[in-house]
Image (tube, rainbow, N blue to C red):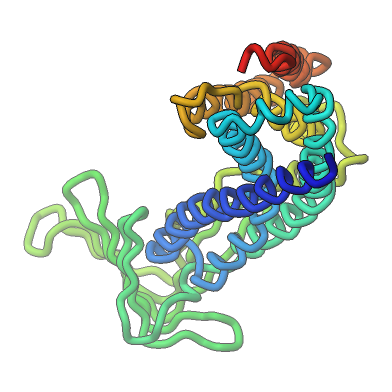
Length: 355
């Protein structure tokens, strides 16, 4: 039976790598396009977009790996059933317990891999990402200005031009700002100098203009205004770089507290390795097909099952964070029904008569 086990695990491992690579490419590609769009709007630089993807890879992997193992098990054993190889195994005295023991090592291996990500590497990378976001709040979009070129911030409806930018302190010289407003009047500024001021407590930034003019309205109209100033603070609306709170996600596992946000984070990190194990055996229970169905006969049913499982985990996690359900329930109220469901399905394939 050792030969049969190696035969099954070889196909399982190959499919796992193939599916995980495909899913990771889809997820990373989608996020990278989103970051590139933010870079084009002036929210962050192209270099930061790449760094964001690198630091979020463990987060993506901890989700993709269990789902990839689920489909690898489903397709591997689905083929064995479709080509009647499982009938041969059953006739040789190989029952569901022995097949399950074959599956234990690959599933537990992936679960340990996911645990290393969710308990250590993902929080570590989230902490580094939180530091990046903090630095990004301090770094002005004006650092992206090329002297002599216009920069348009689409999300804030600003057009900015500067003749020069000091390399030492980032001070802008001969700066022009055009702002679209919701009212008919348009606002423009010209100033000799401009610099970014960061309010750490409010986590906001504004541009402090010095020695300039503020223009509002249309020239020639009665309400046209020109105001000269020595110093003027102008708030600038920037696009958000990332909505997720990486400060909680970046906390050490053993330092998570009792707040709803941290309780939700605790259960999420613990729940992902459990999700990895249960989804593997759930796939085994769903893999039984008839010969005429082919190896892909249960793919749709399997996809609905595993994604329902994942979405319910995500829903419960968000409910804990929002303090909608008691934290002590955690994600167990999702894991337990799926554990019983997987056990029931595996029991149904314990006999060759049911193939």
